[in-house]
View 1 (cartoon, rainbow, N blue to C red):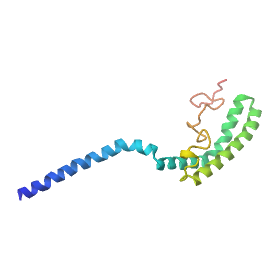
View 2 (view 1 turned 90 degrees about the vertical axis):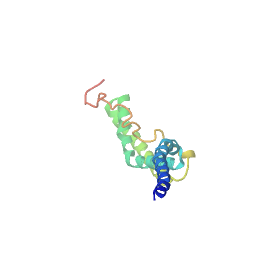
View 3 (view 1 turned 120 degrees about the vertical axis):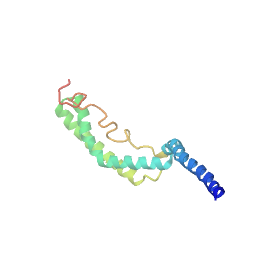
View 4 (view 1 turned 60 degrees about the vertical axis):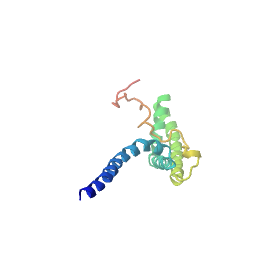
Length: 141
């Protein structure tokens, strides 16, 4: 009885130790592979496309903000609004294209069609006019 127990215990211990070490090794070396894999690039293209479809309208206030800072409020609103509508339509069309073609590596290596990839590259990407860095409505001219 004791020899049978010993014969089972040693292989079970080896399998247990290897089984515990394998997930750690897979986790350690898996991230580098996943970041460069085609599947990850397809997922990124799909996410970028959906983000552009649903947040493309953000281009309107974003362009109004940019033009407002370059000129006076009325001109900024009109010129920025027209530019924003054009950019929004373009961004949403690119988003639909990327969402539909996400499994196909076109353009090469699943690269974005527009730069920046989304209308909000770092939440807003730049400071809004007439607001301070924390977003409080203070005149900062």
